[in-house]
Length: 113
Ligand code: AMP
Ligand code: ZN
Image (tube, rainbow, N blue to C red; front, side, top):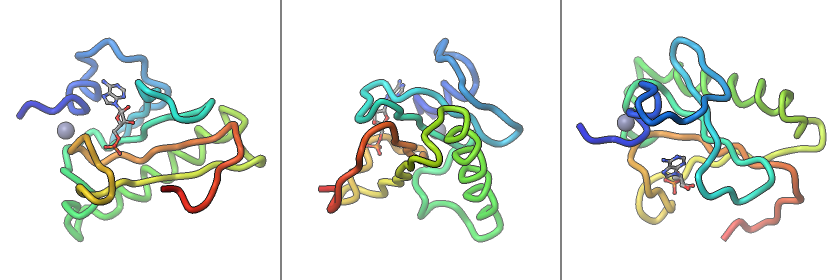
């Protein structure tokens, strides 16, 4: 399967990893939308959040745990940050490998657009 995020997680793209554990890696977004814009992904391929089967749902907690740690490391907590999981075409998802956007370092606005 030809998936850019799988390749990044395998270390094949030379992308610097900001966080890694057995199940999760994180790296800078190529087109940052905030001073801090990090993508947190599972090593295992899931096309979207909808593709995570009930028995694997713990991976979502793993992504959240990594985001907590990165937020402290990048000093965007306690000032605050936003987590985004775009899912499917109308959700604005463009890369079909589950990922969590960790955005911070500026005031976020609502609605997000
Ligand atoms: P989404 O639109 O939620 O699917 O988000 C995909 C994100 O992946 C976008 O913010 C892109 O800028 C980012 N992106 C795409 N390719 C790469 C890459 N090779 N390295 C880092 N970020 C990427
Ligand atoms: Zn993948």
